[in-house]
Length: 118
Length: 112
Image 1 (cartoon, rainbow over the protein chains, first blue to last red):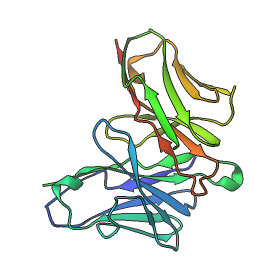
Image 2: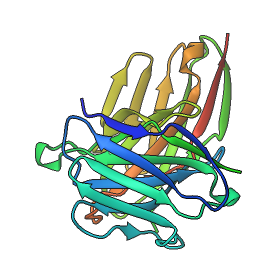
Image 3: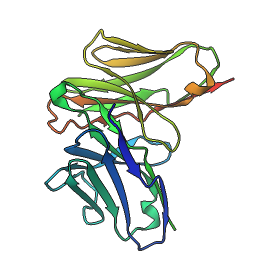
């Protein structure tokens, strides 16, 4: 089945530095990628939707200059947390929808990235 | 406003003790309802998709059902390895981006 590979799984960075998270669709083309943030004991919060070849759509309250999303190809979407601060520490997860042309309305999730900013 | 509410927040069961998790939803038009399992520090793992009221799906000890207002995830004779957070999400017909509306999840703990 469809697999989304997310890297890194864990990252610790110093305050003020930038961190890039990659999500690759391994055996299918992901024209859309959803980026989520999850706080402890809470559900998934949608941050933005990236579309291949166009600008990402950010949810209300999400700073697009801080969370840079690039969807340069049909198999790769990246999230860069710029000038990270301790409050950016969280669990970030990407997700790609299935091929609707095949009536596949499911979603495939990456394994998540635990970001800790110190 | 489209909304998903899961209950209970947490559920502790003895191994073998069957129970159900609830997912109530409010959406103008339902395209699909999804159940996922999430282990700590991992991304959600797909379990089921339900599309219409009356539909049921089963997988091992899990069975998901759907009505026009809610879905139940029944777990029969659970084992400790079934311990996880179970997430419910819905997709609305009018959402052209196919975004999911998530519930807060039910943390299930199965004690041996």
